[in-house]
Image 1: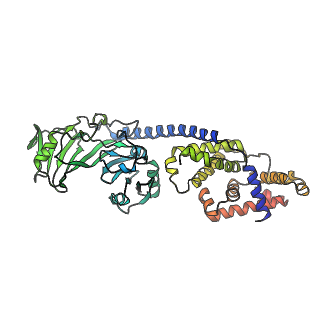
Image 2: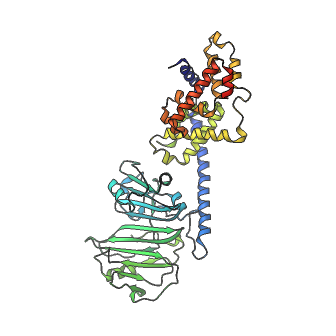
Image 3: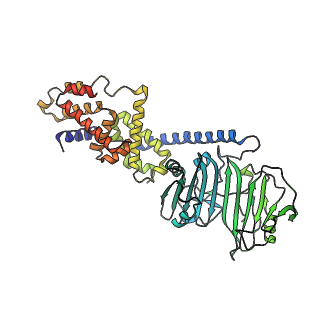
Length: 314
Length: 171
């Protein structure tokens, strides 16, 4: 090291030295951080609310929002960071949140199924997905668009895998920064199962929104013998149609040709059906009828607060 | 590590680096609190980074640059003093051989360096970081870091040997 190098080093050491009040540093940083966080949240919610009001138009009422974007209700359970073992065990819950993604998304879908939980969204014209799970293989296997864009993987806590995929590095990084693993949310739907086939359990639930408005959602039931059915509802702008060719519990219904789907009629803004064919096998029309007959459906799909508190009544 | 824990353990190092970047202890405290306030909002993602300390230093350097760019803050830490003035005021330091006086002189010279050059020297000599890491923090290439370092040391060396003309040109 030259004499000048040594002189520079000594001079800098001397100028930088001196006590630092750690207590005031921490308290000052926290105080500023909290102010910034409040401002940031106000800006995010405000921008999202403005975009939704402008974009939604007059024909579609807005869903109730937590200050801006539609939000799922809190689950009253620990998030994935605190309880990674619970991730992917109950389709009625997702153990993370990402309000910034929801607020910025044109559409987004929450999915909770065996082994993983996922948020998919279109943000700024690009698809982003956030997936968490207890096993890396389950998380990797959850992707529908392999190899597209940039993938960020991490293990935030032991026993938890996180995978974020974005169209490019910036989108993926922003999505990663938006993930909150300290919160758990309930996956809710505009209907509740009052009855389900004996021995069956919900294994998958999903709920999707477009521009803050409910778009579609469903729950997949699986019986002990492997039989599967999907109970699902899609948003419908059109007039309520009471016509049908079938009756379920005294309500008009439509039995699809091939007897692989039964749909309720006369539900405002919703097409509600039970699918028992194609990907879903093992149940009969009578099983679908029984599920639909006991189904509780909200008559105000636009307001999430009117939705049943849980997908199931148990 | 929680945000509070990180600031308690690593915050003082940020303050000391900020003292070198800003040349002003009060502004260093203010700058670090501002940067940590920003970090608090995104702490969950920052804490998961492989090297959060590098990211925070980058935030610090950028915040200092932003402060510098704001028109109201264009006054320099020693507004009426150039490197040449500092050398002139050094007087008979070498003759006396007083180390403290020498450090004070060099510190004045360092404060007069262009902001990026001073940052490179602080990160290289005080933080002992390699050029690649410094480049990451400053958002430039490693060769640019080496160029900044070379020009800075040339300026300091010239000033210390009393080459006033060269010093004035660089300033």
